[in-house]
View 1 (cartoon, rainbow, N blue to C red):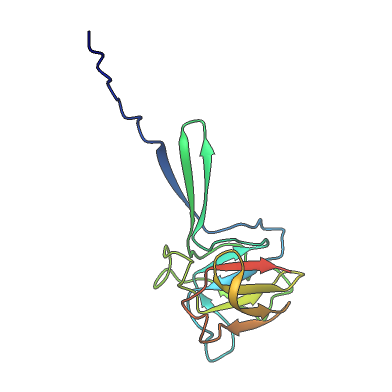
View 2: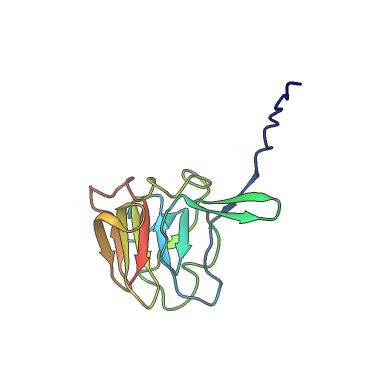
Length: 157
């Protein structure tokens, strides 16, 4: 009597994707990573992504839930917290819907404004690797040419 093996493929884990633009609350000090470069006035006025922690990937992160894999993707947005509390780092604000709002933060940034109480570094590669630029507390800075639109992670120092 021959035995037949039946292989039933497992169903793939469900992937749910959410998008986030704000890793800070209205009462925390944060780094804002901006889609556009500094204006002639020396401030940023564009969609941004705000954070007050180390980000291993500006793409976002994945985590497992009881219903499957959850994907959180970081994107630029506008109209919240950063830039509306005192003291402001040179009055930069997250504003303006286009261009940039809804775009992925990874490899699309032009500059940063540090309203946090600690310095941050922006890196070329994920997991804080490669060329980096340190954004000191209170500074507005365009990213250096090696990092403009080539930003993959950041670290809160």
